[in-house]
Image (tube, rainbow, N blue to C red; front, side):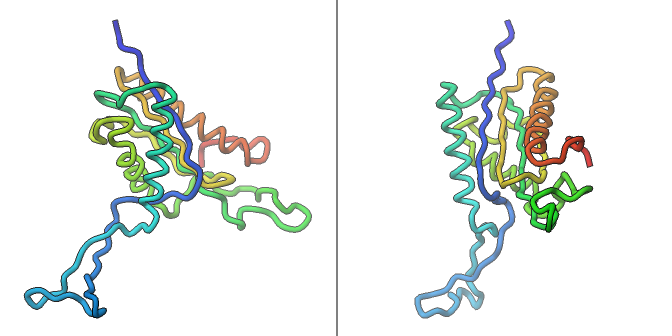
Length: 195
């Protein structure tokens, strides 16, 4: 008998943070001058995103609650990951004057500016390590989208992969989540996840 596919879904509201971009920094002594060793400045590397630790903690907390609510242990074997990154629309997407608050016609659906989609997904993957799965190397399938919405949020679904059908289902879940976000803020007749 085939094992039943296990799945969790959760939403984290607020700004996204990336992971993976590093910035070299000089190490300074108590006197405020750079520390020198063998005639060179001692350096270290830090994440370029200042709020990635907070973002990863929010993802980890939401994942833990989702796993606890469904009484799951960390998933074993390959998993499919779906991440919908929703960015708040800028004010320039809205009309002014008598039609203030209405979206302008022909505004974009997809976000093509920062943050980098893969780096946000990397932060999401790492935050769930030890909570949803043992290691992020278990992620065998990714589905991700970055769209505009009313506010910043990250919608995450993780499913065990016991067949290729799970990959198709993961895409379907992502598209449904996309349509749900767009339905809340798109003028009638323009409900689409296409550019």
